[in-house]
Length: 338
Ligand SMILES: NC(=O)c1ccc[n+]([C@@H]2O[C@H](COP(=O)([O-])OP(=O)(O)OC[C@H]3O[C@@H](n4cnc5c(N)ncnc54)[C@H](O)[C@@H]3O)[C@@H](O)[C@H]2O)c1
Image (cartoon, rainbow, N blue to C red; front, side):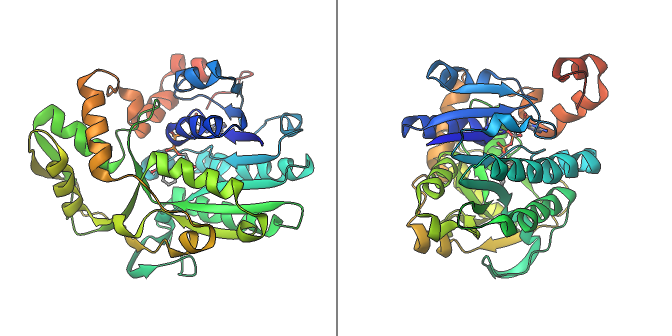
C-alpha cells in the first residue's frame, strides 16, 4: 500500500515508519518536525519520503495517489496540550479533521486516527469501547472530538478507524522520557531511584511502542468490513498496571535494583481497560513486555544511543518553542510559527 503518516517523525511515527517499510509498504510522512527529522534518517535512506508541512494547512494534493492515511500529528500529552488549549484543538482536532476530509476527497480508501485510553479519565470498572468517556484535559477532549468527527465519515469506499492507545513505552529514535516506564528507567539510571507518581494506586494500561506500530499495521491490513467505522482500544489485558506495581516491575528488570521515590500530587486519572475487541476482531495481540523495554532502554542509555535532552520531555520542548523567538524561527514554515 501507499501510506501517508502525519506526525510520522514522532515517537510512535518513527517506529511505525520502520514497521511499514519492513512490511513492504511505500511510506510518505507529513510532519512539522517540531523535534527534528533525524528520527527518520534511516527510513529516508530506505526510501521513505518526508514532507515537512503542517496538518493545518497541508495542500490536499499531497494526499493524491495515497491508499491509506495514518493521522498521528498532535501535541501529544496532557501537559503539552495545556500549554495552549486553542493550539491543541487546532492541531489535534481541527487539523486532523481537515486531513480526514482531504484524504476522502483525494480518493484515499482507509483512514486511521490515533486516540488515547486517557479518554476514559477516572473510572473504577474495567472499561471497553462502549464505556462512557470522561476526558479530563484538553488533550483528551481533542481525542474525543476527532473520534466523533471522523467516524461518521466512514462509508463503503472510505474506511475510518480510531485507535485508543494505552500509554506507550520503549525506545524510539525520537525518544520520550516523559512516558512513565521510560522516565522510570531514566530516573533509576541517573539517581538510583525510580520516580513514582503519587499515590501509586492509579491504574493505567501500557503497551510497547513496537506493538503499537504493529497494531496500526494490523488495522491497515485487516479486511475493511472488520475495522470500518470502529473504535479499538489498543493494548494488552495483561499490561494494566497500578503505578506502584509497575515501578516494582521496572525495578525488578534493572541490573541494579533501584529504590522508589514518590513525587507530585495525586494523579486524577485512573483507568483499567479491556483489549478484547481488537484481539477478537482482527487477532491482534501485543508481543513485547515492560521488562524487555526496560532492558532495551537501560542498554540504550548505557551505550549512548538514548540520551535525555530538553526534546525528550515533550512539554519542556513545546514550552521552549513557544517562548523563545529563535527557536520559533527554526520551526517556522512559510513564516508561520508554532
Ligand atoms: N505515546 C503515547 O503514549 C501515546 C498514547 C496514546 C496516544 N498517543 C497518540 O499517538 C500520536 C503520536 O504520539 P507520539 O507519542 O509519537 O508523540 P510525538 O510528540 O513524539 O509525535 C507527534 C508528532 O506530530 C508532529 N506534529 C505536531 N503538530 C503537528 C502539525 N500541526 N502538523 C504536522 N505535524 C505535527 C510533531 O512534530 C511530532 O513529530 C499522538 O496522536 C498521540 O496523541 C500516544
